[in-house]
Image 1 (cartoon, one colour):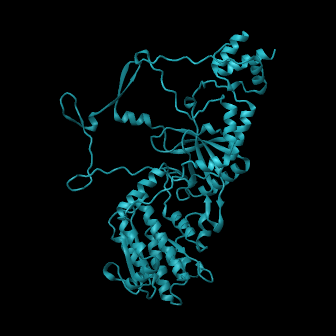
Image 2 (cartoon, rainbow, N blue to C red):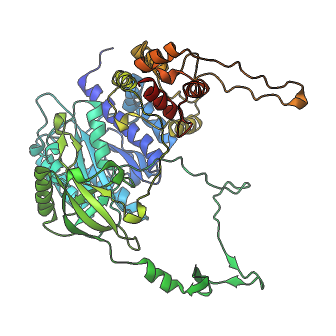
Image 3 (cartoon, one colour):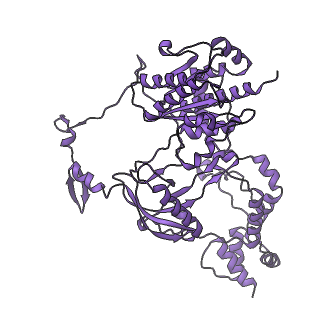
Length: 554
């Protein structure tokens, strides 16, 4: 059955809604979401005050039932179900916006962020009806005054989608300059629409800095959700409380009756809680510029913790974006990084940080791949640097190094951190999804970090065996299991000594010329040193080889 463009656009919108529901269940299950259709024949909304507006899902936390409801609307059967349930009627975007405003006002909770996304392929939803256009613009203005961000998720239609015709006065202004082009270009592919929705529905969260710049964590370790303890009779969540009692009298101690101490010089220093708080506080959160250094001065071992991202906060201090852009441009042109003193949060110790510039990168369709800003690299103090005494190992010969270079070149591939998912977390969510959706069995996952042994062997071919011949002695197989322990005299099996192996002088000279003395075992090399009267300063294999080469070269 051939699908029309209208059907494909509907499928794309429902696919995005389904994807957002599923991701919110995992990442932000306490977020409230609603699904409202407008332009329907049937009406279903609070108090049924608006015609042709159908509230499919009320404003509530997402769950498995909602994912199943959206899946039921997809495909040919879903289109038939939607036609029977909602139908198609007159369009009034103003009534739909008014209904959404009532959904927000009916919630008694305090919402930190409110966003409304309009999915449509019609740039003139009311045709030539000017009254409905004015009503929609007025209601959109009321929503924006109450802190609701109105975004347009417009899809491609024949002849193009002109935002300036109607929606320019309805949607909220872009949150930064990089989003200005995104508001004008419609989406033609499902993946592009998902990326745009994902970029909008994830609110930027700063790490508590009330200054002209915000610090954002670009990568945070994903963990399995912690288990919730329930009361076994009612399945209600239980809370744990910690109380402190006197060890001798058993009386309950109040927080004001508890002090802290630190042993220093064999003396216990007792401090009040206020004194401990004063010791922890150095200064208010902020960042001070110290100077600039060439990028060559920043080494890889200077990264002592994950980096964060720095971006201007124009709402806090006017002109921050302009100054930030100028600093970013000059640092990029001169290939330098900014050295700063940073206090990320209150009661946090100060750290030296390096601000590494990053230019904006835009892909196809003017979709931003990487934003402009600074990566904040935390630098170590002198106390953090360790003096290591690494053990001495034999030095590889040039032939061994060249052979390993061939192996490395064969095993190179393009690495992207976003292409690998944590298999443990994915398996956890697959199991939860199967239980929530009443599936027979969870979906299989692909362990992307599992090495592809067959493909590696095909790429390398004989290189592995050639490298083994250069590194390991004859007859040695590193893949064999460890040799069994010798039997003691009590078990009746005495240890048998291996026969002594001697190597002729001509064979030793041939090994020395070919650089293959490393194939001989340490006992053989020691025996050769004794026969030639070579004195060595140590018993390591490389020292024995160097002493033999020096003796045979005379």
